[in-house]
Length: 113
Image (cartoon, rainbow, N blue to C red; front, top):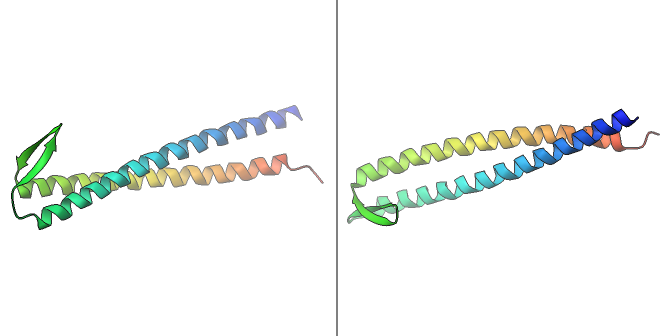
């Protein structure tokens, strides 16, 4: 009986680790979503901009070629979208495994009738 209890405790510990991983992925996803929004807004501003264009380099702004800036932003957008997709896939996979493990633990913890 103690082996079953030990195994259940290990599964609970595993669930806690999975929950921490899910939280980490959620924070990363939120970070990348903020970056995506930032890039989208910059691209919109670039489209309506009629004058000179600037970009941030460290803590200063420098003049930049509009076409090159647009190309850089579109490239950054692609990278952010790929990372978001990857994080979402990993997050979903861990959630699925956690749900399965949680149902196993619940079955093991229910008193036998």
